[in-house]
Each structure stands twice: as C-alpha cells, then as structure tokens.
Image (cartoon, rainbow, N blue to C red):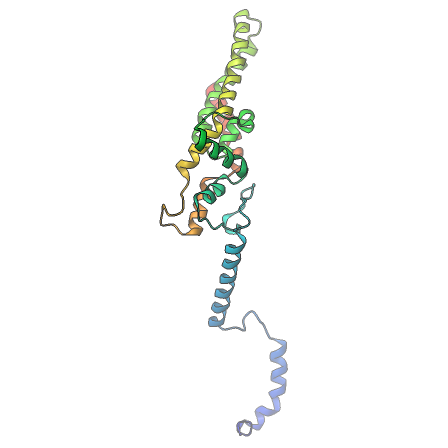
Amino acid sequence: QIENEIPKEFRAVEHKLEDIQAENFDSSVYYSSEEESRSENLSETSSSQENSTGSQGDRKIPLLGMPIKQMKLPKITSKEEARKVFYGQSVSYYEKYYAKLQQQKKKISWNWAAFFLNVYWFFSRKMYVYGLLTMVCKAMFTLVGFNLYDNMSDPTMQSFLVPWAVLYLVVDMVIGMFANYLYISHMESKIVYPGESELGNEDLAKVIIIRGGFTLSGVFVCFLLSDLVVYGLQY
C-alpha cells in the first residue's frame, strides 16, 4: 500500500537517485551527531581500559621525555609504585639504595654518574638547586684553574696547582658519596603518595612524572647555563 502511494514520477527516477547517492556516499558525514558522540565515548572507554590494563605491566618512563598524553599512565596504588614512577629510569638501583637507607640509616654510598657528571646529573634528575650551587662552585674552580695555567711560570702559582687539583677531586668525591642520599631526600620532598591528596590516579601519576624521572632537556639547560656562569664570573 505504501508503494502504491508513491507518485509515478518519483518511481521513474528512484533507481537513478539511489545510484547517485551510493556514488556520493561519505562515511565521515553520514552519522548523526548523537551517533558520533556515542562512538567517541566508546573509543574513549576502550582506550581507558587499555591504559588501565597495559599500564600495570609497563611502568618504565620514556628516557627522552615522551609527552604525557602519549604515555600509558601507571595505576599507582602503593608507596612503592609511586617511588618507582618517580625514579623513572634505574628503578632497581634507587629502590635498592632506598631500602638500605631505611634499614641501615647510612647516608654515604657511591654514584658513579654523579661523580663524573655531577652538575649534569643534578639537572638531569631535576635537582636544580643542587645543580646551580654545584655549577657556581665548579665554575669558580675552573676560573682558578685557568688563572693557574696562565701563570705557570710563577713558582707561587705552581705551588697552588696540586692543592687545587686535590680539592677539585674532593668536591667530585663528596658529590659521588652523597648523591644517592640527596636524591632520596629530593624524592621524599616532591613525591605525592596515594591517599595523601585528593588527586585521582591519572592526575597523581602526571604529578609524579613531572616532578621526578630523567629529563634530557635539563642537561641542555645545564650546558647553556654553565657557559653563562663561567663568563659571568670571569667578566
């Protein structure tokens, strides 16, 4: 009955209209706004489920500082997991020292990276205050060394060369011995543990990642600042 009610003029061109519509069909504009929002909600739900399941096994933070939006944020349910996220790289190394510090209360250990790279190590671990203080100290040592080198013909200057070298090495050794303790102290002052704030799991993970971990950009900033500090003290 419905087909009989359709005008004959429309029936004649009905098949041609169907063919034209099939050729011009665009799936990107076909769905209604309600269906689009429904599909977006489904995709967001599936992605969040993937993040919650996949993040539990993958807790390593990218070395080169991947944007947080592209990370699989870990689900932090304990203080141990929060510390592991804060450490970023070398989790087993710092967690082992943290356990030893809690048991033996020994502040002295040894960190080869801090011994050789001291200023750069501080900046890479986002310990900027210690990094700036060490940078100024090492810059002053460097300027003194340049002055001694330029006046090697003076016997008085030659007598200061060995004490200068020994003192320079002592500073590096002190940094190497107390670097782990300083980093743990820095971690405890910056970290936010689960249950200590009203942050949700994702926001908590973002805060810990931003405050902790390794940053390559800090190394570049340290490289630029070191030249500025040396030239600033020199002139």
